[in-house]
Length: 348
Image (cartoon, rainbow, N blue to C red):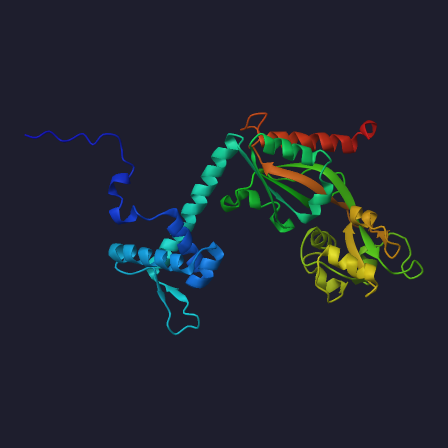
């Protein structure tokens, strides 16, 4: 009687991998995603910054692999479409989704390992926040880079400030962004996030109207609704308006049909091309040294005062999980010191 062979430690499925899958590379799967998103080898090659012939060859190789594995290629050319777009088969769509999840899972896990070892720091920042960076910021960034830390910062939008840390594909360690908070409130009620507010500014109305037309007196919600306003599409000013008027604020305001962000709207007022008003955090009005614009306070006794607050946001528990000299904790301490300086009269 032959004794059963000891299978040894669990293989976790690696022994059953299809041999035809083994030659497939991350580069080929990246090409597949580019082909799926761009729909033609020419556009995919442009996005990948490589020759079209290389992109086409990789697609042919993948098609051959999966024709053998599943009985159909991943994509075919649509001869009826202009530019001969690719049509992905059912197998192709499934493999594309597998490839996307593969890149997300690998990328997020590698990022977590670098993060835990203090070898990387990835920051998302809104445009609003850049003018609030403390003077020591550049010195800290250079110090981290000199220590070999892979430091990166990229733009995000205000509506992503409280959500992007939980998206694995974003691979962010912390957020530098702006929120609106009632005056006197220093944090948010969120069990998953930790927030540090280090600066805050009231909202004001900037206008090029002369004082005899629009006096320098606090403007209420009712008065504001009658003034011609230039409004941004999104951002912290939109959050302010939602707080004052609700989600349907557009229907309650005298908004001008001009699409632009806050800097564009201010430049438009400065040029004198239009007479109107713009809502901004106070620091933006203080930076304007032209004599064409002036700021008017916003206040309504029926509404709680709110501020534009510059915040640092991390996932709750991330700082405790890392050593004191981890870049995440280094940056956090910088902003704690900055917040203390802003609130301590003796340090000013």
